[in-house]
Image 1 (spheres, rainbow, N blue to C red):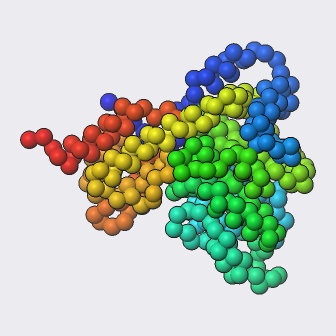
Image 2: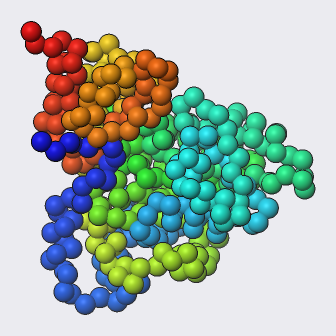
Image 3: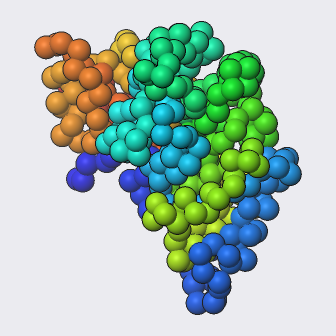
Length: 348
């Protein structure tokens, strides 16, 4: 039997309805570079959720491209980014932001989230001007790298603080679908559009074949963004491919339905970990589960499943990461739980 993967939420291709939508219009001629009718309709569909006439939307193929384009276009050469030390741009993008010439000021956080207090500490420790890079943009992600999600109160506090300090607030939405579909969530896309300067909506991890939607909520920041997209190699000739997918995700509720399934599968795994007496390194709030397990059990599970060993704690146990997706099969979740039970209580 092939090993089933809990490595990430993009192991599969795309949701069947998206594949059907792309196939149905495959031979219909359209204008290139995102000037097609599907991209226009996708923007209208997203704007309905944003409830904002001031927002503009731009599609790119990947999250790293979205982060590079946004940060590099917003900052001058001496300006820096404040981010959690677990932030994706810090630990998973190969120094892509630093390669654009911008310093990332990393701050320790227990849950992957930033707060006004943490940002103020970054400002205080980076204020020896002109000898230090000037903090200008605050980078957060929802959900975070630890799977935690921001509440409306938390994001509102960040928004107000950033405005008072003349800082830009930028939200990485690679897993925004699961964040907005989480049980504890009380945010909407409209809230996020109102509280941030720029954010992006992740399609790749929500059932799309590829693609992310950058949403710019400050008209001044949108000036010349198309030039930055082109210069960074992110302007697809066949931009229709991104538009078709986001239209399918947002013309009804597919974006949220797919994300709710991912969260439900993670909740089932997390509950089983708790029932089995395993500690969690981070609370399960979306589609990532971080159980702490004995190393021998981890080696046993790796014979049947793929997942990351997130951190080796000591010679006895490690943290693993289990990620569920819009396509995760519940039967495979049950099999994972069953394998743990078989290991702990082997049949005589």
